[in-house]
Image 1 (cartoon, rainbow, N blue to C red):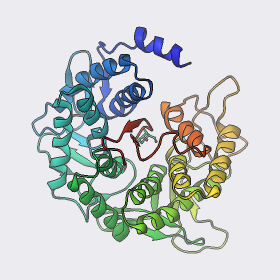
Image 2 (cartoon, rainbow, N blue to C red):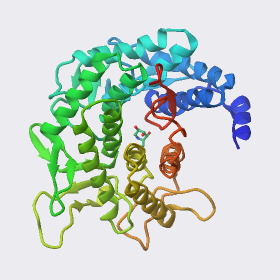
Image 3 (cartoon, rainbow, N blue to C red):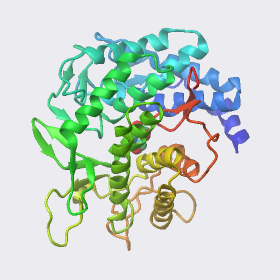
Image 4 (spheres, protein in one colour):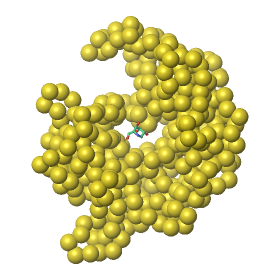
Length: 394
Ligand code: DMJ
């Protein structure tokens, strides 16, 4: 299968096309995938392709502030923000660094790293943070945060936090500003976003909007226990591991408390005990499941670092439910519209590439006891589960 895929990359993967692509999605999926494949196979074809797409994405950084636009035309070499705004998403502009930094290291051309380091440098000093927590938007003209006052670890902010830690690890734990920003942010999470639900006292990460706490948690937030555990493994405080243990249980309950045993996209936690109510409530607009990876990703890290078999059991349970409710008899899996209806989960006929790239890969790693199957002291996973080498391995 690898040979077949290689042939496709060699003959059919052509980037000289008049199409608009999203900078972040193309970086984490395409550039990240090619760099990772280059490292795992040693085949220079993948590095050549990585260089090609990397160069074609660079026009995104030509903005008044050097904060990149969200979209690039990879054939024409032009870039632009979405039609309705000149803002970019904070998570998007701060989660392309692992890939561009690695591309510079491999090619010896520093322009890739310079462009993404500049973004981190600016974000480090920006005002508008709340104890290390960042807003969700940043303006490409002014370079300032916009839509201030809303803080989440979910959509539009999530991987900012993940990449602070992972860049610090990638670079050999020398870049102190990254670590400072990460540690401050986790303190911010503890101070503003952590609460416990009823009746099971589950620790969850909510959201803050203009001083008002909301007990809403995106499934996306379930990357956090894995990231906290990775930090603790790299010498950060044992408190982070304690928090990781509490949060992964919550993420598991987001599956276990639902009729299909699959998590919805978003849950709301009950803050007050009510007879007959579980911790997790689901609004009709939020009851879809896109085959997302975050919980199994965190289960993988938790199992690697603790050896506690319950994490494998939880992952196995989730896999059984994916097989039961999302598997397509003619091949593949699909997103579903309704995790609350086991008799008709309403298949969507759509499988995101992250189901193969991340969800199944993390399952595979979770069920293995071989720590050298991507050793976490030698590799760091990008946010699309593509392993990249740590520059100075432990
Ligand atoms: C993936 O593209 C990445 O994991 C990203 O960080 C978040 N969204 C999807 C998976 O849910």
